[in-house]
Every structure is written in C-alpha cells, then in structure tokens.
Image (cartoon, rainbow, N blue to C red; front, side, top):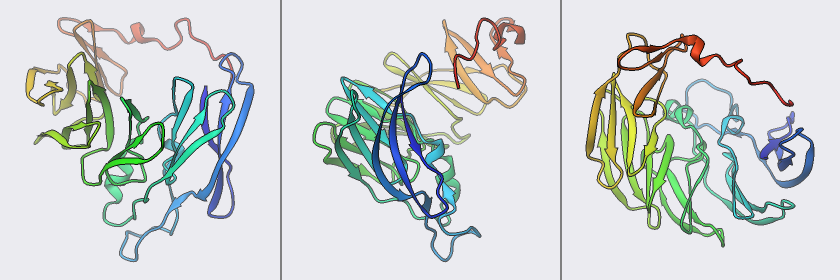
Length: 274
C-alpha cells in the first residue's frame, strides 16, 4: 500500500514523503522524499479568530491512487505528484494555488479531499486546500483545466467521460477532458454526505429521501423515502435495498429491519498490524 507521510515539525515547514508499506505486515518497502512545504494555511486579516498557519488539512486528505505502475498523490499541501510504483521515483510534481482562509472557513472544512479520479488522460483533483477542482494530464503533469467555483466538496466518481462532484447543496457533472459543466442540480433540502455510482446513475441523499440521478443529464430517475426517525449519517444500496447508518449503527430496510447484531464489526475480523 502507498501512503503520504509528513513529519511533525515545530516550524511551519514540514517534509513530505511517499511511503510504500507491505500489506501483509506493515513493513517499510521504500520511502521517497517529495517536498518540504508549509503545513498550515495563511489567513487574511479579516478572517475569523484563528492563528496564522494553524489549519492543517493534509492529515485528513484522500488516499493515494495506484494505477498501471504509477502512484498519484494529491497532498492537500499545494502539490500533486506522480511517482513510479516500484521505487517512488518522482516523474512529475505539479503545484497549485492554495486557498486563503477568510469567511470561507466553513466551506474549506467541509471539503473531503477525495482520492483523485483518473478518467482517460485526465487526473481530476479536488484537494482540501483548493477552491474548486482541476485536471492534470497524467503523463506530462501539465494543467488541462481548472474550475475554481464548481461545487466540489467531494468527487463522487466518474462514468464514461463525466465526472460527478458535489457539495452540501449541489451535485454537478463535469466533462473530464475540458472541465465543461455538463449539468447542475440544486437541492433545497441540501445534499447529505457521501454518494455512490450505480451503473449510469448516481445516488445521493437529500433530506429524508434517496435520489437516483442520471449521470448524463442530472435528471431524477427515481426517488424514495428513507424510513428512519433518527438523523441519517450515511446511506448505501445493496441488492436494491437501502441500508441506513445512524448513530445507533442501525440498518433499515423495507420491509423489516437489519439488527445491529447483523453488523457486528467483530464477526471474523481482526487487526493484522498497526
């Protein structure tokens, strides 16, 4: 497995490595130094009360993406890198402008820093420390397009050449090659966390309903009520049945329910290493 690692440093600048671990025992296979950069984000003078460079977004950013002998790393520290999967040799490193903190603090904290999406020749990225989304040509590392204002708290996935992104109010479709906005759906009741692809459709939650949207047009293909009286944290559909996660780890299906014991995390699972 591949992970980004940074060393705690009393100064504002931290070194960043790409580390390869043996999945069987967690042993170190190799490590490759990528860059040294500021860990925190600067704030303007009119920002909410917060120390300069105090907000660290990198520790909760998305995972690295391994594909066909290369590892793509979106650091949420102002750079994206592609490395050789065998030894970590840096093939290219692309920098981007980091967002400035101000009255946008709430939106910045809601960004998930999703693992990048590789669609054709485009590596689509939405780092936590960037406003919007952008794409890089995967072989050369050159910027293909950028959309600084598109809703992009989270990248849901890609179907064909369409990339789906969302925030807490909108779900949008983008053309992966050009960044062109294909469609935009706004939800008055907001959009819940998560979302999943189902063939040529996308499922998202708004209020107490589950919406199935067309990836091609954004139109509603289906809509169903979610049977839960508690705040819903996440929804997944398995075998055509919605499974709802609440604070009590309760799964709800229609008709009937899934007992909490059916979701026991100790059933046959154990930690291999740490």
